[in-house]
Length: 210
Image (cartoon, rainbow, N blue to C red):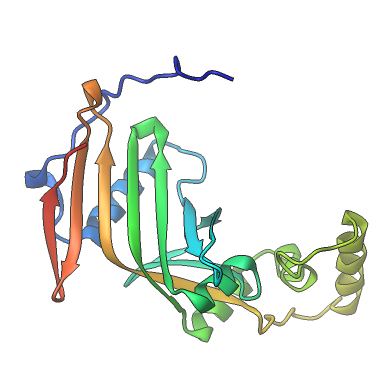
């Protein structure tokens, strides 16, 4: 399969240091709102990259749920990403909004969020998703799909008429950034790349070559 001819001529915007917010989290919120306004499907989808105990990298799409000190997502703590983070708490996340010809790349360390926040988010989820958090031993081998469906029906019956408790093995993580790069596609592959780097507790902003 030869994909050499697949090309795009990026020309939808520009990114100038003089026009970005001094705080990268605020700049992210500006861009995220613009992605929402552009009606991009799941603008909160982000590619999370982690490193396992054996130093093997892995990646997957997860959904951003909160932006505070950093970027929060929720998962099974016993999943592959959970095990990866337990061994190496450095990670990166990447957003790509193709319709706007934009990318945001974020590096930092990962911490578990407060259990109260995990509980608050769990209780906001649809009931079927709450049951799903109990059903799936994420990343574990299973014999077939029917195994999951049978377990779901079993738990659905068990908790009929009751609130579903949050599993102890399920909750949130927050990636606390120390490096954030905003990328805007430009013509002739002379893309705009503006970096915020946390140095001695302060965000320093600079441009890097495409």
